[in-house]
Length: 298
View 1: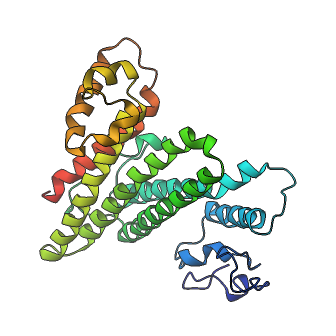
View 2: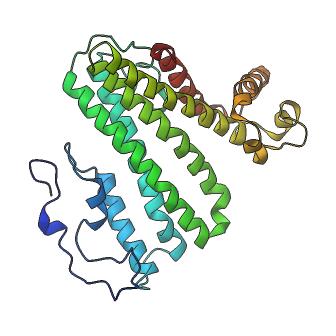
View 3: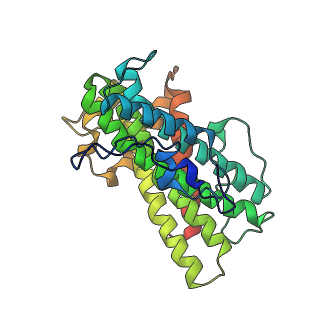
């Protein structure tokens, strides 16, 4: 599918169908095999199977939406949501690829469970010795790709919610997660770039950029915990008067850390914590960003 540079072969991007006139929908399927992966090339480390899945699911969505074709097995609502979910899965996979490569490059043991991969390399300093420089370069590619793909999933979710607003509650959580993941991956990308840069202004500029992304990630992942994993009873105690969980965006992000710490203290003092497993994922994101932030000077 690719040439030596990671560029999609021309025959896989050759259009078979012309758009129907000047007013054609911009998402008109041109019949080329990998039409929807063209914007993401080059692929220097190969094309992810999840990327291929997105390409074909996006094609099916466009054939349904523009060409009014009917899928043999999937309902219109399910098919309409597939590109957004495929991009989300691709983004998550790139994040995991980055974590594994980072651990290899820094000679760190990595657990098999995805939600436990955030912390083993989080506290490594930017001047730490690198065992495998090539793995760092590939991890940078993974984080950069994962951030971009995750960002592109958001308009896809917005699109399917316009068509099927009954899924709002479900997909809002997906979108909030993706918003927190993008700056975390961008921070990790710039942090690794700083590790490869010579000590001095160039490295510090990259660390400054990483710090900005990590601060954004902390705010957005604390938002997820406060919005989705603090029950209404606790919210009534710790949130300002008149603010419910669904209104958390009305609270300035500067107030999130105090609310977050208070909420976790109350939750951990309780006998039962039904959201522990789901919430711990976001706690690890926050911890990773906080640990990295200490090494950036920011």
